[in-house]
Amino acid sequence: MLELKSLEKKFDSFTAVNKINLFINKGELFGFLGPNGAGKTTTIKMITGLLLPTSGNILLNNLDVWKNPIESKMIIGYIPDQPFIYDKLTGRDFLCFCGGLYNLSDDFVKKKIDELIEKLRIDEWIDKRTEEYSQGMRQRIVIASALLHEPKLLVVDEPMVGLDPQSAFIVKKLFTEEIMNGTTIFMSTHSLHVVEQICTHVGIINNGNIIFNNTIEALHKLKMERSHNLEELFIQLTNKE
Ligand SMILES: Nc1ncnc2c1ncn2[C@@H]1O[C@H](COP(=O)(O)OP(=O)(O)O)[C@@H](O)[C@H]1O
Ligand SMILES: [Mg+2]
Image 1 (cartoon, rainbow, N blue to C red):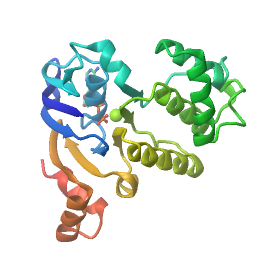
Image 2 (cartoon, protein in one colour):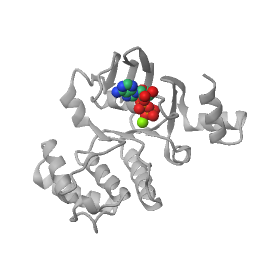
Image 3 (cartoon, protein in one colour):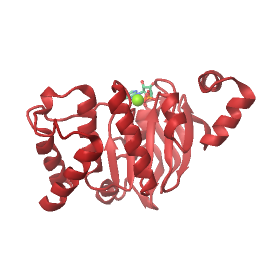
Image 4 (cartoon, protein in one colour):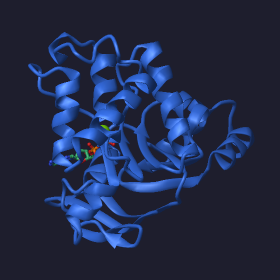
């Protein structure tokens, strides 16, 4: 589904992402872990077409995302770490606006909004201006906007930051349902707990290098061998370099 081939990003002489290789299959929920400044957001911005790689390729179903920008964006749903929504629009207006960006028909958008209102439990808020929303509500609307066009790949940058327990629960449940329906999810996160709960595969990036890339079971095995818990293992792995 998604392949990163020797993907590199330099900012002047500083290497933020160092020729990384990753292969993510359809239906995986890939957790992209790493300390602050490791290169997670930089990688995600290259995948979503916002930051031009210095070298290397990103293939989405064998399509080079930088050579096929529009086709790629129709396949990708993106939830950024600092999402932007228009304060003066209601949640519903914002979703209709996003549907327009993807050239979706009004009927389709209407149907899809109803479905997402239920899944994300936003019925009480959907017709209020987003300036009234809590952080959790804003995040739920942003997630709804990323799912409107039924993307095959959902790319998510730190979705759990600042979420109240109820919103976090809803988001985790939704992501799990999405992969069961065949969507692939690439999610960066700080939360080891979330990774243990919902991810099927895990990649760890440190100083721009991939230092672990395997299934969640393999991570658990390594945890048993080397330390008492995932937190300790994560500190061990990321302190080595
Ligand atoms: N536009 C930029 N210009 C210069 N350096 C940057 C830029 N964006 C990110 N960096 C640097 O690249 C590294 C990786 O950043 P980032 O990908 O945001 O890390 P993460 O998301 O893993 O916390 C950091 O050292 C950061 O300071
Ligand atoms: Mg980041």
